[in-house]
Length: 105
Figure 1 (cartoon, rainbow, N blue to C red):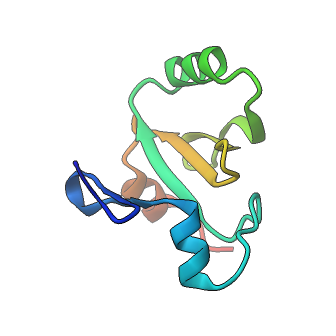
Figure 2: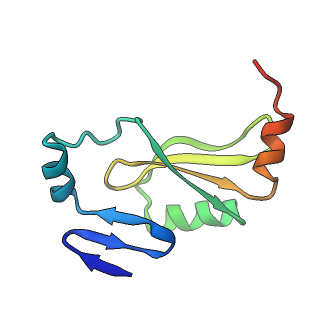
Figure 3: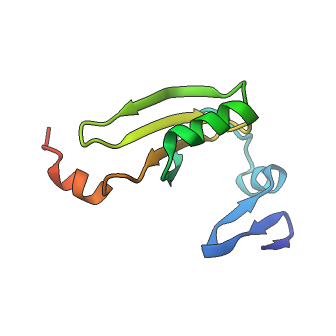
């Protein structure tokens, strides 16, 4: 981890930036819970993840509680404390295989 000028650079090239620097860069206010994008993660034990989430962050604001997509993947969506949309899905089914088997609509 490297911290430099408002950026926290993590492994695999993930960079987190402090809000004040992002506002300066955009020249606009940041609108939380705007659903314009989401951060997606996979979790081996999604039920265990939800249990920890609710224990450590009991005021979690869900977009949707645990649901199962038609291809079999379980997911939840919620807002983090900064209003970013987070999706966490289980990795028990191969998502690429799931999409290949998902019928076109």
